[in-house]
Image: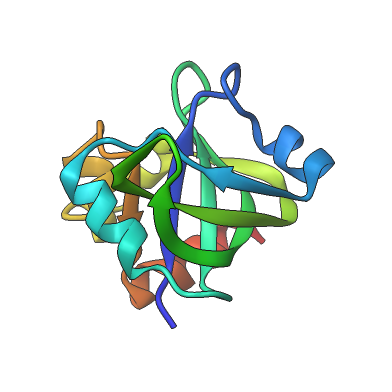
Length: 132
C-alpha cells in the first residue's frame, strides 16, 4: 500500500463535493510527474485531500476506488477514481506543516505546484496524528 495526497482548488472541486458525490474521476492532471504518481495508485490506497488556493490545508481522507486508465479525452494521460472516506474535524494548514521540520523535504513543501504526490509512511503517520 502507498499513501498519497491530491490537491484541488475548493472552488473547482471541494472535498464536500466529493463527499456528496461519493466517488469521482480524478482528471485534469497534466504534469508528467503527477501522471507518474497517478499510474502508481492502487485500489484501496489512502489519499489525503488538500485544498489549495486560499485555504491551503488538508481537509479530508479519500481512497483510490479505481486504478489508472487512459483519460477518455486524451489517451496520453491517465485518470483514477477517488472515493470519499471522511472529512477531518479540523483542517491541517500548510503553515502548520511547514512549522514541523520533519516535512521540510516533502514535495508539498518543496514542489508547491505538484498536484499529486506520494506521502512517505512516516510522514503519513505524523499527519494523521495531527489531524486526529
